[in-house]
Image 1 (cartoon, rainbow, N blue to C red):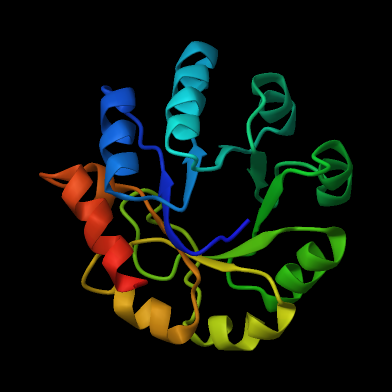
Image 2: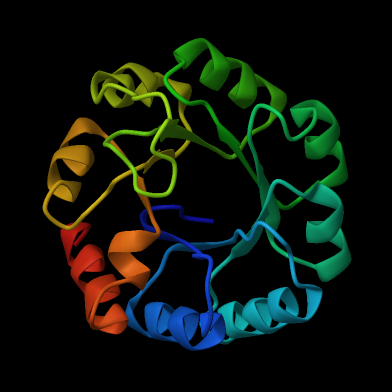
Length: 195
């Protein structure tokens, strides 16, 4: 599975299926279902949409839900459970790990079997304003890990090129994608950055 391009993370709020469909039509490399209160019916509908576009969909923070729904994998943060146990449960599926601003966390995650690692917040983020900031130098330092590197936090079309130049393979975007006046167009514009 080639993980490179726009990594769309679902926002809070309504009209999620419509918004996700528009993003998928524009072009998404990876989709993460992330809601504070998970809605099984909604998650199932989003998985079906992702399948129509042959885009892998993973569940945030919840290995058991990912398995129950038949999702393509899960993404775990520091507080979301043991990566080694998650890797065993998610055999053959995508496992991502949040590594914040810590290269040693990323190294440990890869040794445990993570398929990609995420660093951030790379910029000030409206979604997580208190998040620790990750320096862009982390991406060149982490290239030797041999897995795709995701950048998250405050990413916009304007600052995205410097992240790609720094070595990010995936750009995890919420607000700049789903709050855009034309979601399909915005997704396509991100895709062009990787062309």
